[in-house]
Image 1 (cartoon, one colour):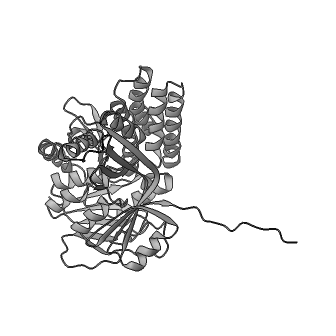
Image 2 (cartoon, rainbow, N blue to C red; image 1 turned 90 degrees about the vertical axis):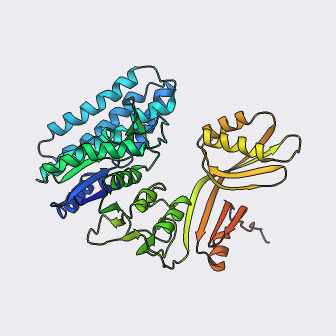
Image 3 (cartoon, rainbow, N blue to C red; image 1 turned 90 degrees about the horizontal axis):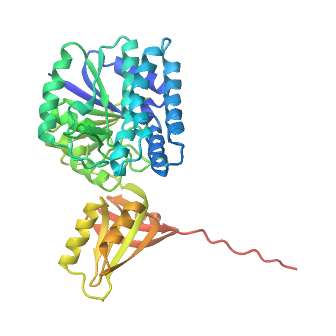
Length: 433
């Protein structure tokens, strides 16, 4: 059985016109067996995060924020369907569980509640898309990915139980193609053995598609984006970016590890394990193959720039000026893992250890508190990390302009900088007589 896995992000389903465009793309593949993985509509995940924050702040606004999300989805439904009531009922049934959560006192575990509430975004978007595909006459079924994607209980960053997920996917998904061509399901979410909803980390829908591709031995995986493919830099930040027509798995893993946003960092490995090609394609030009990521061996690349904002440097040192020894580093890394602080760069000297991480103030505060009195920690914030793959001196010097470089590291073809943007200096105006 030949299966393709398609993933559509939030921009692909943000409104009526976008969903209609997805419908036109899928009509081109009406006879193919597809798993269609959908992200939450537009900025729904951000809006649901605000519901969680309000619930814990007990400011009385959480229910109104959830109602606003309901209205946004209802507006899309009314625009898409001439007879919307069935779809509205389906959406309302999904939101009832969120209302029950908000009626109770906040759970002791913030991350647990986060996953129960924020996960609803993908359930809503996938149901709307499913009903729309049915209205087009496509052979589609809706499927709850939590019936197959089993994880541990690390809420907000769940780890996949690969063995059980593969068994469940084979037994529950494969039979559905006997009476349909398209299975619409959710990205980003999974479930524990206790049937508690988990999430795979922000932007995790790509990873979901890769998990299902692996478990079902997919022919190919396709990510539909609002860009022509994988580019040499973010077009919102740089002019004259170019599309990379082909990438190796290795290069794609390197790029995503260093922060390239076009693909979730965990996406490539499951595909590489089974040599499943990944196509990053423009949803506004469905005839284009975009960028093909596969087991390429001999490719050359132009300089590729990745900007990772909201960085923090943690400078950790011993209070008594003793060496930062192996047992110190072991404890520090254990705490970094405990609070899920991803290390982007690091360096140690005789009496200090410095790491660059994504700025997550709550987690950093807990990390610092548990370091104890043996250490002191100084934190630099308002920083960004610049990674240049396949760099040359010209582009390196250009990226350093008007920046204070706090941290620099070079490994083979890659240079990384942690920098603070400097304010432009202006000459004072003087009055002349």
